[in-house]
Amino acid sequence: GFAEANETTLSSMAGEIVNAFLSLLGVIFIVLIIYAGIKWMTAGGNEDKVKEARTMITRAIIGLIIIVGSWAIWNFVFLNLFM
Image (cartoon, rainbow, N blue to C red):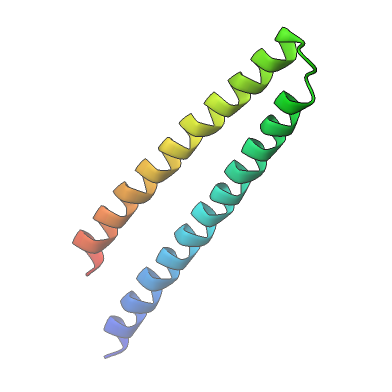
């Protein structure tokens, strides 16, 4: 009855919140990659600026890997505990 509906609503709401948060992080990743790409393209051969842009891209990719990993863990836990 009510307890089942409450648990389902709570777990689906938690799932929606996590998906929204991970989507926001994905958008931030895309913005960072575009910004680093622009920075690289406007470096004008300045090695320090190119190195800075490369570092930014590397960190953004590492962040994306962490985001995808956390999503995979969340999905695994969500499907095994709540479903």
